[in-house]
Image (cartoon, rainbow over all chains, first blue to last red; front, side, top):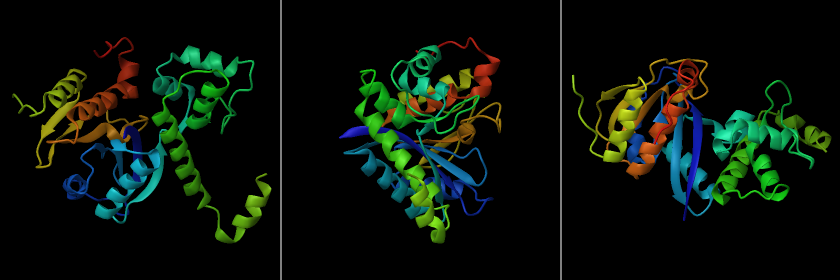
Length: 175
Length: 90
């Protein structure tokens, strides 16, 4: 068993929902390993530190625990996944300068950002794999497993935004 | 006014850490022991949704619950901007 540390953010169908109506039920529903954030009306976020045999098992059981209690909640983000350099440095425990030098000044081909701009964004999983394989850094297996699983979930959610009748033609363009 | 202590020392320590950083701690609930409130409640804050966080009376793992609380306090972007040289925890 490993400990998996991740955060799930849900949209609540009722934007005026009173969190106290479901917080107690989430405890009984198995979320006693989560810190629940209710600072934005209409949303709830849960930071889990969950014991499981894989990141998939940890995250899927967590989503099911929430959906059983609040069926109308829809998942909108699994993190950590999309990160800027500041986030990546914080997660890895490096200084920001250190990670910037690694990625931007590296001789070996560094991970390609999802968005390139003033503040570029990467998938954490791609940074971790690159650090491990090209830079031979030691990367925590549980963190990499979580980052990859979160990336898959977030991409699966994005995929659903594509109208079903155009999914096939869009897929053909993504080569 | 003195608030009630949290029954788990690891959680109580983290709550004191939150208070030292300006957070308000409100007690109330049954499984939920209470809530913590960020002093800024900034919409721009990256971890804004945790500006109000619910604390369990009997979390599955008290050490982890304390860690989760400390992280929320440390992630407050507003506080970090206001107080650049804030002391490192532990």
